[in-house]
Image 1 (tube, helix red, strand yellow):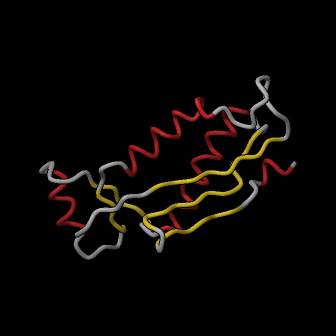
Image 2 (cartoon, rainbow, N blue to C red):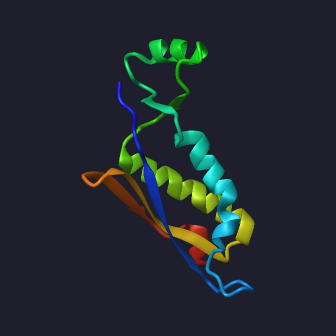
Image 3 (cartoon, helix red, strand yellow):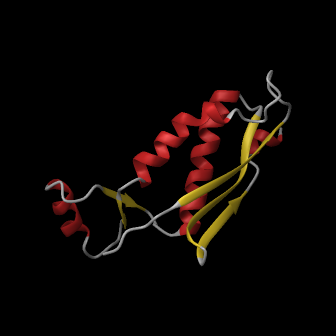
Length: 124
């Protein structure tokens, strides 16, 4: 068992700048930051098919760890997941004015991955 230290980078674009001249006002991203913290900050990540899943669940129930079960804990999956979360938030908040077109998940300099896609709803 070992812990992770993850960092995330987001790239944003906009069809037009907001009233303050911003693509995205970073102070408005607190809900996204909170979602990332809830999932990744001081938590124990495990694949849903981990052979020790029942053991980890018992430890979670004993408050020995804060378990998060994911389809895949890899950097590639994490990058796509946070891309989706960012775009769900931005689509609702900015009504299609902005989107996140790229994300990067990084554990260390040799273990990182990015995901890049323009959401269909932003293209139109």
